[in-house]
Image 1 (cartoon, rainbow, N blue to C red):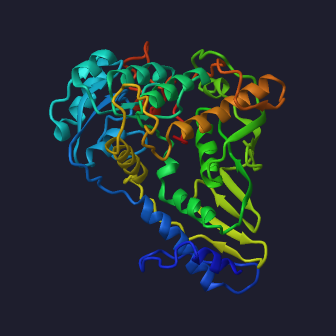
Image 2 (cartoon, helix red, strand yellow):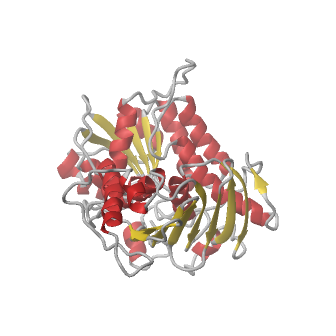
Amino acid sequence: MRLGRVLAHIAPSPPAATRQHATWSSSSSSSSSSSAAAAAAAAAAAAAATPRSPAHPTSTTVAIIGCHRQLKQDLGGHNFASALAVTPGVQVVGVFDHGATTRARFASCWSSVWGEIPTFDDVGELLAATKPDIIVCALRQTEHASVIELAVESGVRGVLCDKPLCTSLSECDRITGACTAAQTPLLLALDRRWNQRWRALEAVVAGNAIGRVLSASATGLPNTINHGCHFYDAVLMLMGDPEPASATGLLTSPCLEKWQGPPPEQASAMDPTSTATVFFENGTVATFSPAGGMGFEVVGSEGRLCVFGDAMRASVYSNSSGELCEVALPDEPEGEWRPGLAMVADLLDAVHAGGGDGKSRAAADATVATTRCDCPGARRATEIGFAVHNSSAAEGHRVNWPLAERNRAIQSYPWGNQRGQEETGGYDVAREGSTNINSPWG
C-alpha cells in the first residue's frame, strides 16, 4: 500500500484551508497524493486540538497557588491565569504566593478581569475561605505534594499542576494517591499533550502510517527530570503511552544534592542530563540522549516518523515505497498559547464530567474523569527520570518497575517564589539576570 493511501485513511477529507507543505520523496518527482494525505492526517488532529470554549451549565471557581509567572495578561507558557481569563464561566476567587508584593501585583494585573481578588499568605486559609472548584498549583515542585494533598482533602474538584510534578517518587505517590482516592482529576501541564502540531503527529502514528510501533528515540535532552519530563511525555504520547518495564541510564555528570547559589551552572548540576534506554511492557524500547539538537524519531514495522526540533517539521518514510513525505503540520501562532487554552478546557471537561469532592469513594463503578495528562500519564513521565537517576547511582544497572527506590530526592533549582525568596519576582527577575534560572524549554 502506498504511503499516501495509508495517511489518507486517517482523515480522508481535510478542510480546504489546510496549509500544504512540499512533499519530497527518494525520487526526483513529488507525490501530490502523499502530500494531500499527510495534510489530511494533520488536519484531523488539528481539529481535535483547536481551542474551544467549554459549555458548562455553571461557573467554575479557581484558586491560584503560586503566581509569580502570571503577572502579565499576555497569553504564554506557565501563565495559566491568561488562559483562564479567556475561558467563559471561570472566576479566580483567590491567590496565594509566598511574596506579598507578588500577590499584590497579581491582584492588580487581573482586577480588570475578575474584580478584587482576595490574596492570602497561607494556603490552608485560602482553601477554607474560597472553597474553589479547581486549584492551579504553580509553586516550586518541592511544595507540590503538600499543597495538592491539602487541596484534595479540602474538597477541590480538579487540580492543574505545573511541571515537573515532584522531587521524589514518594511525593509522586502522595499526589496521585490523593487524587485517585478522592476521584479528583489531575492535569499535569506537559503542554505538548495539547499542542496542535504534536497532536497531529500523534494522529499520524495512531493512524498506522508507519505500522506497528517498534521503538523511539529523542535527542537534545537538557536535563533528566526538570525538563526531561517533556521529552519522555512526547515520546510516550507518540508511542501510544506504553507502560515502562525497566530502564538503564547514566548521568553525564555527578548530581549536586543542594542548591548552593551562583554561578548559574549549578542549576544544571542539580539535575544533569543523561543517556538512557527505557524498555516497555509491550516489547517496545525508547532511547534518550543529550547529543545534538532537539529531535525525535519513531520507528514502525512499515516506516518511520522523523520530528525535527520541537515539531517544527516532520516527515514520514515508507519502507515499502521509499517515499519520504513531509507532514503538513498545523500552525501554532505565537501569542495565542493554544495548548494553555486547550488544557484548561480539558480539565473543566473532566471536572464537570464528575470530578472528585475530596472524599474517598468506595463504589466499584466509581472512576475518575481523565485528562490528557492524568495520574497515570503524570506518573509515567515522572518515573522515567527518577529511574534514570536510580540506574546511574547503580552504575548503569537496569532498574525494574515498579521502582523500589522512591525516596531519592532530586531538588529543583529556585523558581523565585519559594520560602526565603519571597520578593525576588521570580520569572521577570530571572530574565534580567537573577540566579533564579528559567529554562527556554519551559
